[in-house]
Picture 1 (cartoon, helix red, strand yellow):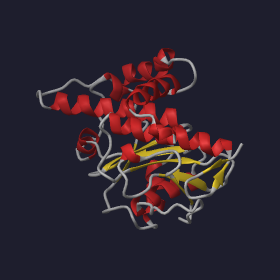
Picture 2: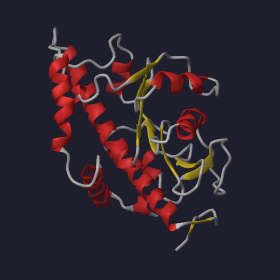
Picture 3: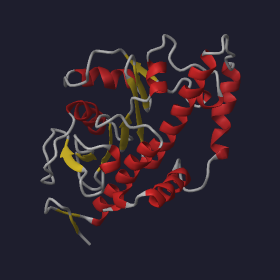
Picture 4: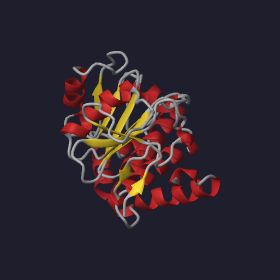
Amino acid sequence: MATQLKSGTRCSAEEWAARQELAACYRIFDHLGWSESIYNHISARVPGEEGAFLINPFGLLYDEVTASNLVKIDIEGNNLDGSPYPVNKAGFTQHSQFHKHLDHAHAICHTHTTETMAVCASEGGLRPTNFYACNFIGQIGYHDFEGVTVRSEEGERLLKNLGDKRILMLRNHGPVVMGRTIPEMFIQTWALQRACEIQVATASMGRDLEVSEEVIGVHQRDISQTAAPGGPGHADFEAWKRRIDKIDSSWRD
């Protein structure tokens, strides 16, 4: 059954479900303190529509995002749903490149949390000093800062520096995290945020301990044994949806 958006455009049941899941993600990020005024962005592909994805309306806080006010655009930046809202150009430049070229990049987020930006601004980047960091060692790409990401030609370098990874640390800037689903992207972001928080805290205490490559290998081999049912991040995401529903369920509208 199709759903009519506030702009008057109708969307499929599959798109509406994707809109609700992405709107929930915005509210969860905001609840966890991962928002940045009206800036930063989370996007997700529209099911069954080649080259179309959903992203936040530029000018709204994360706690104002709802399923119906998300903006549907294509990889050329064209508005596809009649939304009156613009899209952050930096968000479009990053996300369109990854959605266009990477099959696994169904959901993408870019954050500016204090801890992740601090690690992006440190010479060694993320280091194997804690449990969560060990999840990511050898699985992160790094991209040197070139200024605000609004020039399309930077997209080629973003893709090159990401390589076969699913997390790209923009040096002196902040991380970009990708997932095959919104819950997978969410749980990777949550674990990365925890890794950076702990690294920053540990650095304030003096000399820290690094985990050996051998133990990192064992950790990465075995970590899937601790996953809850439903696929990566599913149980976590559903739990946080229940939390935000108790606070404000307007994201569903």
